Image (cartoon, rainbow, N blue to C red; front, side, top):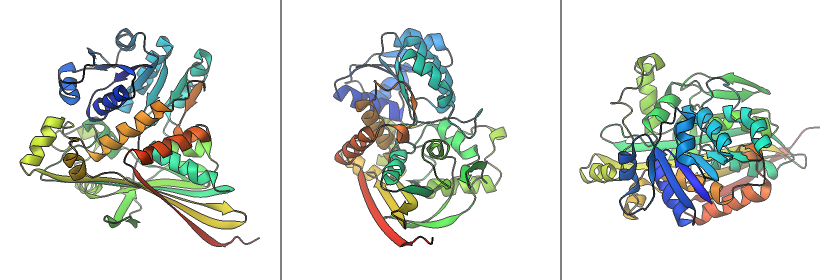
Amino acid sequence: MRIFVLGVGATGSYLVQLLTRQGHHVTCGDREPERARRFLGAKLPVTVNRVNARDVWSIVKAARGAQLVVNALPAVCNRIVLRAALRLRAHYLDTAAHLTKSPFCAEQLQFRQRFHEKRRAAVITAGVAPGLTNLLVAAAADLLDSVETVQVRLYESTESEHPVSQWSAEVSFDEAVSRPRVYHGGRFSLGQRFGEREMFRFPAPIGPVPVMLAAQDEVVTVPHVIPLRSMDAKIGGLDAERLRRWYRQGKLRKSRGLVSSRFPRTPTPGTVDRLIQRGILHNAHFAAAVVVEGIKENRRMTIRWDATMPSLYLLYRQGELRSPIAWATARMASLFVKHFPRHLAGVHPPEALPGEIRRAILRDARARGFRIVRRVIPRAPREL
């Protein structure tokens, strides 16, 4: 397949490598081709075009002939890239939603009719969290007669002498200043930033960690696909605690803008190597858990999924100079591309994909370094 990847940072550059290994013909676009080349490395023979992602025609010109447009940019660009894909009559994939104009429904879903008319497919929020987490919710729902509650719990921890962005600075800042979405009693609402703090036990070696409400896209796509009563997403770890401290100190406000000392640019592989060698960056971890409660044959049941990714230390030993989040997001996006439903016109979040595609992606994720474990916990029979 001819694929155009827009946004060649930590995640996009690794995704380009993975798609090239899959045998696709890949070209790229970025506002800074020189910096993109530092992420890609000199040995990868991939064309990088200079593209203004705020201009539909700049994207169309660079991506002409592509069968699939992969949007690896910050989600603020989603609408523009979606329009470009439609003009190109290309399929589309991205890894996140922005939710500014439609806080309780992913903005990509507003393009469903136009993709149907073009007979093209768009797979949205197709990374790790969201992405893998959505697939795990759907896998649990497949085992239940009905779903009552869904909890998404994430752990992000960067052990460093000063802030090092695992995501792009724009994405990290946008999530930090956004109010969390929650779904309770069949209704959406906005939660308190860093609110509803509680303890959650992740698998060893992480253990119990305080988690708090986070602005996660799963909460605004899953309830539109899977009937349920309540859903929320919380995050814990050193990164979340640092953001909470800045928020309580009044240093984390949208009106103050993005401060580069707190949200530095994502380090290139060469910078990651230097930070580790100088003893500034020690390690980084990323893990996700999905807990789904529901009813099976008139009995209450809890299904818990735990997904653990290699640490920065393990990736470094394997020669991978990238964060666990970039590694996981790119790998999952490459699997969504591998199993892309070209026959399925419209716009689809991961949980809305056909069951055979969802199961195939999860099988491949396990085979490619993701440790995914399921536990089924039966509860007392439901009272009639």
